[in-house]
Length: 255
Image (cartoon, rainbow, N blue to C red; front, side, top):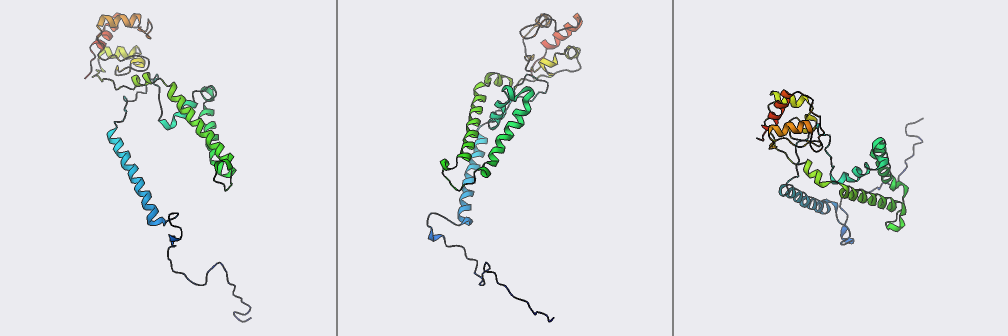
Protein backbone atom coordinates (compact mmCIF):
# COMPACT_ATOMS: atom_id res chain seq x y z
CA UNK A 1 0.00 0.00 0.00
CA UNK A 2 1.32 3.37 -0.96
CA UNK A 3 1.35 6.13 1.63
CA UNK A 4 -1.70 8.32 1.42
CA UNK A 5 -3.65 5.92 -0.72
CA UNK A 6 -7.31 5.75 0.25
CA UNK A 7 -7.20 8.81 2.58
CA UNK A 8 -10.10 11.20 2.43
CA UNK A 9 -10.43 14.74 3.83
CA UNK A 10 -13.69 15.59 5.56
CA UNK A 11 -14.72 19.15 6.22
CA UNK A 12 -16.72 20.31 9.26
CA UNK A 13 -19.32 22.96 8.56
CA UNK A 14 -19.15 24.17 12.17
CA UNK A 15 -15.63 25.46 11.67
CA UNK A 16 -15.50 28.54 9.47
CA UNK A 17 -12.96 28.40 6.71
CA UNK A 18 -12.27 32.11 6.97
CA UNK A 19 -10.62 33.59 10.01
CA UNK A 20 -12.51 36.62 11.24
CA UNK A 21 -10.78 39.37 13.19
CA UNK A 22 -11.60 39.59 16.92
CA UNK A 23 -13.92 42.58 16.67
CA UNK A 24 -16.47 43.18 19.46
CA UNK A 25 -20.12 43.02 18.53
CA UNK A 26 -21.79 46.20 17.43
CA UNK A 27 -24.27 46.94 20.23
CA UNK A 28 -25.73 49.93 18.46
CA UNK A 29 -28.35 47.69 16.84
CA UNK A 30 -30.05 47.36 20.26
CA UNK A 31 -29.78 50.88 21.71
CA UNK A 32 -30.48 51.02 25.45
CA UNK A 33 -31.11 47.26 25.73
CA UNK A 34 -27.62 45.81 25.86
CA UNK A 35 -24.04 46.90 26.38
CA UNK A 36 -20.54 45.52 26.48
CA UNK A 37 -19.59 43.66 29.65
CA UNK A 38 -16.15 45.29 29.67
CA UNK A 39 -15.82 48.05 30.58
CA UNK A 40 -19.38 49.45 30.58
CA UNK A 41 -21.31 46.94 32.70
CA UNK A 42 -18.44 45.97 34.99
CA UNK A 43 -17.63 49.61 35.73
CA UNK A 44 -21.22 50.23 36.87
CA UNK A 45 -21.05 47.17 39.13
CA UNK A 46 -17.84 48.41 40.71
CA UNK A 47 -19.28 51.88 41.29
CA UNK A 48 -22.38 50.49 43.03
CA UNK A 49 -20.23 48.15 45.13
CA UNK A 50 -17.93 51.03 46.11
CA UNK A 51 -20.90 53.14 47.28
CA UNK A 52 -22.21 50.32 49.50
CA UNK A 53 -18.72 49.60 50.85
CA UNK A 54 -18.11 53.25 51.80
CA UNK A 55 -21.58 53.45 53.35
CA UNK A 56 -20.91 50.34 55.42
CA UNK A 57 -17.55 51.67 56.62
CA UNK A 58 -19.15 54.98 57.63
CA UNK A 59 -21.86 53.08 59.52
CA UNK A 60 -19.29 51.06 61.48
CA UNK A 61 -17.50 54.27 62.48
CA UNK A 62 -20.58 56.31 63.43
CA UNK A 63 -22.62 53.58 65.12
CA UNK A 64 -20.91 52.22 68.22
CA UNK A 65 -21.13 48.41 68.44
CA UNK A 66 -23.35 47.19 71.32
CA UNK A 67 -20.64 45.41 73.25
CA UNK A 68 -21.54 43.37 76.33
CA UNK A 69 -19.52 42.25 79.30
CA UNK A 70 -16.78 39.65 79.02
CA UNK A 71 -18.18 36.17 78.47
CA UNK A 72 -18.41 34.15 81.68
CA UNK A 73 -18.55 30.35 81.18
CA UNK A 74 -19.70 29.89 84.79
CA UNK A 75 -22.86 31.95 84.19
CA UNK A 76 -25.39 29.24 83.33
CA UNK A 77 -28.29 31.69 83.48
CA UNK A 78 -27.12 33.79 80.54
CA UNK A 79 -29.67 33.92 77.70
CA UNK A 80 -27.84 34.09 74.34
CA UNK A 81 -29.30 35.87 71.34
CA UNK A 82 -27.89 35.27 67.83
CA UNK A 83 -27.64 37.87 65.09
CA UNK A 84 -30.82 38.88 63.30
CA UNK A 85 -30.28 36.59 60.31
CA UNK A 86 -30.31 33.52 62.60
CA UNK A 87 -33.30 34.56 64.72
CA UNK A 88 -35.73 32.34 62.78
CA UNK A 89 -33.63 29.25 63.53
CA UNK A 90 -33.28 30.39 67.16
CA UNK A 91 -37.06 30.66 67.45
CA UNK A 92 -37.56 27.25 65.83
CA UNK A 93 -35.55 25.62 68.63
CA UNK A 94 -38.06 26.92 71.20
CA UNK A 95 -40.92 24.76 69.98
CA UNK A 96 -41.79 21.43 71.58
CA UNK A 97 -40.84 19.09 68.73
CA UNK A 98 -37.69 21.02 67.81
CA UNK A 99 -36.04 21.35 71.23
CA UNK A 100 -35.01 19.18 74.14
CA UNK A 101 -34.77 15.57 73.03
CA UNK A 102 -35.88 16.68 69.55
CA UNK A 103 -33.07 19.22 69.08
CA UNK A 104 -31.67 17.26 66.13
CA UNK A 105 -35.00 17.74 64.32
CA UNK A 106 -35.02 21.50 64.88
CA UNK A 107 -31.31 22.08 64.31
CA UNK A 108 -30.62 19.79 61.37
CA UNK A 109 -33.57 17.94 59.83
CA UNK A 110 -36.08 20.79 59.38
CA UNK A 111 -33.51 23.38 58.13
CA UNK A 112 -31.94 20.69 55.93
CA UNK A 113 -35.27 19.87 54.30
CA UNK A 114 -36.08 23.56 53.84
CA UNK A 115 -32.79 24.56 52.23
CA UNK A 116 -32.64 21.31 50.27
CA UNK A 117 -36.05 22.07 48.78
CA UNK A 118 -34.86 25.51 47.71
CA UNK A 119 -31.82 23.95 46.04
CA UNK A 120 -34.04 21.48 44.20
CA UNK A 121 -36.52 24.15 43.08
CA UNK A 122 -34.76 24.83 39.72
CA UNK A 123 -34.81 21.11 38.93
CA UNK A 124 -38.45 20.63 39.95
CA UNK A 125 -39.64 23.54 37.84
CA UNK A 126 -37.58 23.77 34.65
CA UNK A 127 -39.99 25.89 32.65
CA UNK A 128 -38.79 28.85 30.64
CA UNK A 129 -41.59 31.11 31.84
CA UNK A 130 -40.61 34.17 33.87
CA UNK A 131 -44.07 35.10 35.09
CA UNK A 132 -44.67 34.01 38.70
CA UNK A 133 -48.12 32.51 38.06
CA UNK A 134 -46.61 30.36 35.32
CA UNK A 135 -44.12 28.80 37.76
CA UNK A 136 -46.25 27.68 40.74
CA UNK A 137 -43.80 25.17 42.22
CA UNK A 138 -40.74 27.42 42.45
CA UNK A 139 -42.72 30.51 43.46
CA UNK A 140 -44.76 28.56 46.03
CA UNK A 141 -41.66 27.11 47.69
CA UNK A 142 -39.98 30.50 47.78
CA UNK A 143 -43.06 32.22 49.27
CA UNK A 144 -43.42 29.47 51.88
CA UNK A 145 -39.77 29.83 52.92
CA UNK A 146 -40.02 33.62 52.99
CA UNK A 147 -43.22 33.65 55.08
CA UNK A 148 -41.80 31.09 57.53
CA UNK A 149 -38.57 33.06 57.94
CA UNK A 150 -40.40 36.36 58.51
CA UNK A 151 -42.86 34.83 60.99
CA UNK A 152 -40.20 33.04 63.04
CA UNK A 153 -38.00 36.14 63.10
CA UNK A 154 -40.91 38.29 64.27
CA UNK A 155 -41.83 35.73 66.95
CA UNK A 156 -38.26 35.65 68.22
CA UNK A 157 -38.14 39.43 68.58
CA UNK A 158 -41.62 39.67 70.14
CA UNK A 159 -41.12 36.95 72.76
CA UNK A 160 -37.54 37.76 73.79
CA UNK A 161 -37.03 39.25 77.26
CA UNK A 162 -35.16 42.39 76.17
CA UNK A 163 -35.06 43.91 79.67
CA UNK A 164 -33.34 40.86 81.11
CA UNK A 165 -31.02 40.66 78.12
CA UNK A 166 -29.97 44.27 78.60
CA UNK A 167 -29.36 43.72 82.30
CA UNK A 168 -27.30 40.55 81.86
CA UNK A 169 -25.21 42.15 79.11
CA UNK A 170 -24.18 45.26 81.06
CA UNK A 171 -20.47 45.76 81.53
CA UNK A 172 -20.09 45.40 85.26
CA UNK A 173 -17.51 46.91 87.54
CA UNK A 174 -14.35 44.99 88.18
CA UNK A 175 -12.71 44.66 91.54
CA UNK A 176 -9.20 43.90 92.69
CA UNK A 177 -9.79 40.48 94.27
CA UNK A 178 -7.20 39.04 96.63
CA UNK A 179 -7.53 35.37 95.78
CA UNK A 180 -5.06 34.45 98.52
CA UNK A 181 -7.09 35.95 101.36
CA UNK A 182 -8.94 33.76 103.88
CA UNK A 183 -12.24 35.37 102.94
CA UNK A 184 -11.89 34.45 99.27
CA UNK A 185 -10.98 30.88 100.20
CA UNK A 186 -14.19 30.62 102.24
CA UNK A 187 -16.09 32.25 99.37
CA UNK A 188 -14.77 29.56 97.03
CA UNK A 189 -15.20 26.63 99.44
CA UNK A 190 -18.84 27.49 100.13
CA UNK A 191 -19.68 27.44 96.41
CA UNK A 192 -20.51 31.15 96.19
CA UNK A 193 -18.65 31.31 92.86
CA UNK A 194 -21.38 29.35 91.08
CA UNK A 195 -23.89 32.19 91.59
CA UNK A 196 -21.80 35.31 92.14
CA UNK A 197 -18.83 34.62 89.85
CA UNK A 198 -15.16 34.12 90.60
CA UNK A 199 -14.63 37.91 90.76
CA UNK A 200 -17.88 38.67 92.61
CA UNK A 201 -19.20 40.19 89.39
CA UNK A 202 -22.49 38.33 89.59
CA UNK A 203 -24.16 36.05 87.12
CA UNK A 204 -27.51 34.70 86.06
CA UNK A 205 -28.37 33.25 89.50
CA UNK A 206 -26.84 35.86 91.81
CA UNK A 207 -26.21 39.61 91.84
CA UNK A 208 -22.87 41.35 91.86
CA UNK A 209 -21.30 41.72 95.30
CA UNK A 210 -18.96 44.54 94.31
CA UNK A 211 -19.77 47.89 96.02
CA UNK A 212 -22.76 46.25 97.69
CA UNK A 213 -22.91 48.80 100.54
CA UNK A 214 -23.70 46.12 103.11
CA UNK A 215 -22.12 45.89 106.52
CA UNK A 216 -20.47 42.64 107.70
CA UNK A 217 -23.42 42.00 110.03
CA UNK A 218 -25.91 42.34 107.18
CA UNK A 219 -23.84 40.02 104.99
CA UNK A 220 -23.69 37.38 107.73
CA UNK A 221 -27.45 37.57 108.17
CA UNK A 222 -28.05 37.06 104.44
CA UNK A 223 -25.52 34.21 104.27
CA UNK A 224 -27.36 32.35 107.05
CA UNK A 225 -31.02 33.25 106.49
CA UNK A 226 -30.95 33.88 102.75
CA UNK A 227 -32.51 36.66 100.67
CA UNK A 228 -34.50 36.73 97.45
CA UNK A 229 -33.56 33.73 95.29
CA UNK A 230 -30.87 32.73 97.77
CA UNK A 231 -32.38 30.18 100.18
CA UNK A 232 -31.52 29.87 103.86
CA UNK A 233 -28.85 27.45 104.98
CA UNK A 234 -26.56 27.89 101.98
CA UNK A 235 -23.60 28.74 104.19
CA UNK A 236 -22.28 25.58 105.89
CA UNK A 237 -19.16 26.93 107.61
CA UNK A 238 -18.40 27.90 111.22
CA UNK A 239 -18.58 31.33 112.85
CA UNK A 240 -14.94 32.15 112.10
CA UNK A 241 -15.40 31.41 108.40
CA UNK A 242 -18.60 33.46 108.40
CA UNK A 243 -16.74 36.45 109.85
CA UNK A 244 -13.97 36.09 107.25
CA UNK A 245 -16.49 35.84 104.43
CA UNK A 246 -18.52 38.85 105.58
CA UNK A 247 -15.42 41.02 105.97
CA UNK A 248 -14.10 39.99 102.59
CA UNK A 249 -17.36 40.80 100.77
CA UNK A 250 -17.97 44.10 102.56
CA UNK A 251 -14.46 45.35 101.72
CA UNK A 252 -14.67 44.41 98.03
CA UNK A 253 -14.88 47.60 95.99
CA UNK A 254 -14.46 48.45 92.34
CA UNK A 255 -11.19 49.74 90.92
